[in-house]
Image (cartoon, rainbow, N blue to C red; front, side):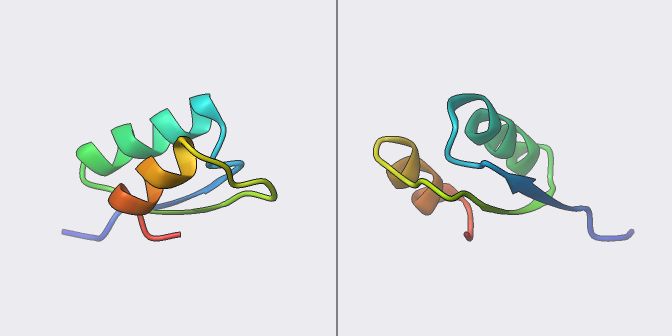
Length: 51
């Protein structure tokens, strides 16, 4: 089975961050970047996803 990878731009936005967490739950290897990284999304994503 191949590794499923996804990179999300704007990952600290509410929608994109939620999408990243959903993708992770579905078995994707998730990475992302964002120009502006602020709590609470930055804290949540840091706990769940490698940035």
